[in-house]
Image (cartoon, rainbow, N blue to C red):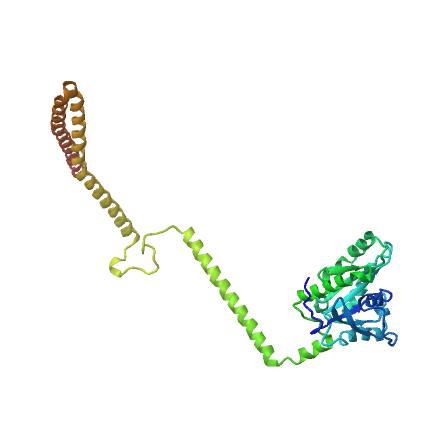
Length: 358
């Protein structure tokens, strides 16, 4: 993994946190060697140096109690002050949990106390974005106790994005630093801003910027409502088109025709019946117009085929003569049949009219 930190340009700023006896000083020695500056008891210790080719600024905090109300106010103040000792703020908050044996799994109350102590740095989720849990254990300890500790601290790990590492010896220091840098990359190189600076910046935000932010949020909400309204309108229109049968253009329009075309329901019924009747008569007339020549042509073809088959017994000449004779016979016969059918239809119409008159 390529380091995003250059020893010549930027140092990696780390704050070690944990309860009394968690092993923070041991972790500090792993990272920066055995040399440890003297400090007042119950105060933060600042250490600087290099590890795995990286410049390190390390703040070791005094340990807190198993319950937050047992932690002295001086220790609480030092924990809050720790993030200001590596300005402008630490890249990583390393929460150290000691793994001693399988039976020494932290209780639920101890884990809740850890969360409350971490909230001394910030009440919001900012603190967990920069936190990684470091399980410190002896070389001889097996994997089973470590897994028990990890499983027990699952809710705590969820808060910090499940970022954790198991440290057994100083040979793992490069890997620990790589895990820290991976977390920093996940935060886009950002660092934890101490609460005192964060509150100061929040107070210094101009009122007009807050108003502009509110206007922007209101405008965004308005655009979303308009978009949703257009979507619902489009969906309603589509549904209406699918549910309502297609009608003739203008037949059920909201805009009524001019007065000369305004008709009552009875008149509309009559007109529609008349239109249908006229349409039917036109179609029958058209059929009769084309039916007579079509019938003559079909019968002529049939007669020619019959004559051809009958005359084929006498050779080609016989077949040709059969075609002519067949067509000559069927055409007059067809015309006679059509005339008889027309005469019968006309006689039937005259009879019906006579009955209606009588």
